Length: 499
Image 1 (tube, helix red, strand yellow):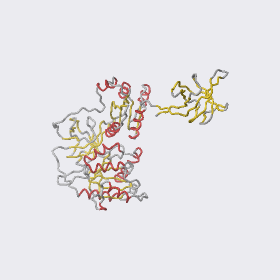
Image 2 (spheres, helix red, strand yellow):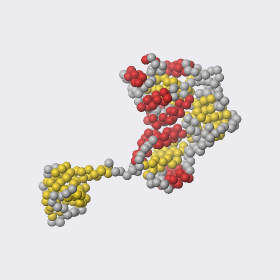
Image 3 (cartoon, rainbow, N blue to C red):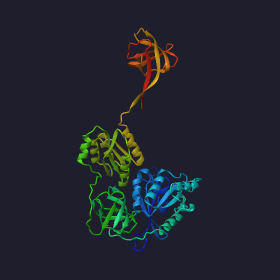
């Protein structure tokens, strides 16, 4: 069903769902929507923004489900672009967590209307009173304590409180000044973009102004004409001929990937816009970039990456996270970033730039795997972003030569010198500090000056071969290579460890 909006009516509310990872945001929306998306999520973490429309009491409500992991902060910010109410989801068995505080800051900075949803009330917990008190310290004052913020207790698992939540959304929305007044320019807000190997570029958008129709021309305010809307589908994959304000839709036919948070203008007629065209760097790189990589001006250790992802939102989130990695001696360079599965071109670029290939939620054919193996190209594919980021950091750090430190095992004073029948020199010594250790490195000191560096190849105590001799005990030491020592010289046993 398509939502038609009259200028004298309030448009349907847009509700953005935010909160800490694993607090049940997607599960709650599943119980509203009647689907089972959460079961398909990797590690229980929503990796992409989704949006859908439901009907409650004959009224439409649009929900935007945003990822909970901190790496998706920029994607959550994009969801704020068109949001009437934020649902702040807090699991009662967990409480206020780092991403909860991050969302609260977003709410306060953007002066957003918020409803606090206490989820997982089916679990035994005594935390609720404390959580409500902690919210006050974070600047969220609930109505039951004299504030203005509404709250509701729900269980995504049992669906208890879900209808109360929907009622509360409509109640709060009706109290807002939200009369829809059309502007001269029809527009969409982009929530996500991705590439389908069969149908091309697809974007998830919300209609911000006007009524979007199949066949409309679409324009980017950054890059100009993008073609026509070939088809429109809702979150249930049903084809639509048109979609009104606040409707979440998937549009097909655009010639370029659309940026998350970008505003797209649409019209039945071709129009001229004052557009500052920008070069789209997605999947492109300049020759000067290639030259600066292959012939660097400075000797800097570099980890070069070819980055491929399934959606634009994920790609942007990964790039943002990788840019935050700070290493003094290593530079991480994303030489190419693109959407879609791996191609021969990716392998050729990786080969010429000595890059590793990092993929997120993409596939590689058996042919590509074999070709990459023959070309000695490393390919790493992930389905959880923070693991990808951790591994890239580890890979970069592995390029830094490790630093080493000498650690003394002990010291011994040479008391006697014996020459064996096989002409080996035995240093009769007394351990006066720490211990002597077989097969350890050793130094010979005379009056504080280091004379020679060697290795303890034999260590005896009372004619018995031993692995170590402790302080206060006598021992016989044979070193190799040998060195002419004197009585009173000091033998220092030491080991080398990574710092």
